[in-house]
Amino acid sequence: AAEIETHDYDVLIVGAGGAGLRAAIAAREAGLRTAIICKSLFGKAHTVMAEGGIAASMGNVNSNDSWQVHFRDTMRGGKFLNSWRMAELHAKEAPDRVWELETYGALFDRTPDGRISQRNFGGHEYPRLAHVGDRTGLELIRTMQQKIVSLQQDDERESGDPEAGLKVFAEVTITDLLQDESGAVAGAFGYFRESGRFVRFNAPAVVLATGGIGKSFKVTSNSWEYTGDGHALALRAGSTLVNMEFIQFHPTGMVWPPSVKGILVTESVRGDGGVLKNSEGKRFMFDYVPDVFRGQYAQTEDEGDRWYTDPDNNKRPPELLPRDEVARAINSEVKAGRGSPHGGVFLDIASRRSPEEILKKLPSMHHQFKELADVDITKEAMEVGPTCHYVMGGVEVDPDTAAAARVPGLFAAGEVSGGMHGSNRLGGNSLSDLLVFGARAGAGAAAYVRGLGDARPVAPQGALDAAAATALAPFEEEGGENPYTLHQEMQQTMNDLVGIIRRADEIEAALTKLEQLKERARHLTVEGHRQFNPGWHLALDLRNMLAVSECVARAALLRQESRGGHTRDDYPTMDAKWRGRNLICSAEGDGIRVEEQPMPAMRGDLLALFERAELAKYLTPGELAAVGATKD
Ligand code: FAD
Image 1 (tube, helix red, strand yellow):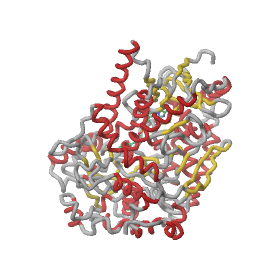
Image 2 (tube, protein in one colour; image 1 turned 45 degrees about the vertical axis):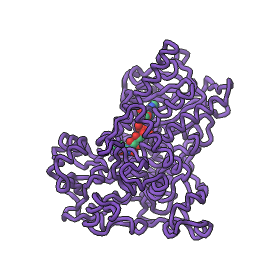
Image 3 (spheres, protein in one colour; image 1 turned 135 degrees about the horizontal axis):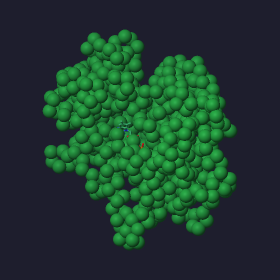
Image 4 (spheres, protein in one colour; image 1 turned 135 degrees about the vertical axis):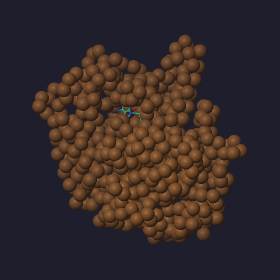
């Protein structure tokens, strides 16, 4: 233990996706020594996979757009369970964060008159997603890496050392946070993936920007990195997770061939005119418009089709309902025996747009289907079905500073944080979330560190020894469990029993199984050495996935209603009494405790952005009576 490589920083950013990079830029610009740590190669974060775009009400394509409309859409998408303060900050600040990317060098697609182009997406009233073809995330990461290099060049000019103010540690996995006796953050502990050597970072502030949890589920659009590490790190440090029952199943993942099942088919296909059909050739989404959205969506195919060219005088087609609605509809069609040959439904853009248009707007989708499924999307329909895509739940944070609950010095931004998206996230609202709250987290961490002065928390040696012992445990055990077997059983359990449609008895069965898996996970055995050993890495990730899965299942059992990314067969409707309640998960011994917590009432000026009749769909009669003047 005496030989552990040690580094000292002011701010540690765990994660190099959009949220982490934006936080690092903010912390470094505030003058603090900042380290970025990521478990993949630098530049390979999940954000790179984002296709459709960044939601921001710049109003470039339809000047009626404004932050107020974006705020409204976000709250509707989340079925009013969002942290309204986060939704407000997000809607107000997203345009500035996008424009700022241009100053870093981003090259967005343009409108004919040269402004940043914006495309339609589900749940957004106006064309709002700034994009670069269907490769927006790649441009976002490329641009911020470029900004980081330019900041490093500044540092080199000033001090002779390009890494004096901002350094990247790639292929390092953090396994534990370090805290002082009072619980304040003192740094983090991890290992180099290649060599297996341990590394210790001392820092009074840590920003978690580790992304999501999709690898807990069998069918997912998420990559190997999404093992819920940040969620679990926060829990183990004594912080809390909010809204963990809400998981977004994206309606359109690939369903065939089996090796690529779950890979995302971007919503832009529908935004650009693609429609969903069942095996009878019917555009079935018209049968699935729920009451809360009736009046905002077209009732006939003709009207829906006219909307693409004349959005001011027509309503949008129901293929562009929020994702939870579309995913449930596809699930119902397949269950009713009207699915496609491989258990999905058809997504057809070939009969709706010319090959030239498809190739220009959806080049990656064309490539993906040609390479992986031998389907030419300019000629044939795709087969698609729901896939676990995004976790709305995450670390409970202060909206303004991104400070995590209960643990001084801990911050969280991006997909690992919770609250912003309520029960369901709108497409495009993640990339904007990363930028808005990444910047706020970096600034929040910097302000916290400045406030500490010279009094920096120090972790006791025991904490370090314990972290090292936990990491090495799978090498000590002989004849124990195989991490791959446990992982598969957990993924199957979550998929089958806590998936898109849930029931009390099934969730209870999942919790029993998770308990057994947790017990078996105490006796994992890995073969070989510490040098690049994927079995060992998985063994360490498993405890995170198990903790997070238990949060999802426990919260899902407690919430007796259906809302957004949480559908209960035994409580099929949305219940106003649950709207005002968050479910908060914390670690208790070896288990997870879930508590109800009332949400703060929305500010009057924000409530006034909605018509009373709409509020009545979400609020209890008591809440509604307390509401002052609204728009009607
Ligand atoms: P990520 O970009 O995932 O970065 C996480 C980082 O944390 C990585 O660098 C990883 O290595 C690191 N990390 C994790 N654990 C550890 C650890 N223990 N130690 C060290 N490092 C760690 N959203 C939109 O708004 N618009 C879109 O068009 C869109 N398209 C999408 C398409 C796909 C296929 C997918 C999967 C998602 C899409 N999303 C989209 C969602 C969006 O991309 C993600 O929610 C977002 O990129 C998450 O960013 P992040 O910064 O929070 O995390």
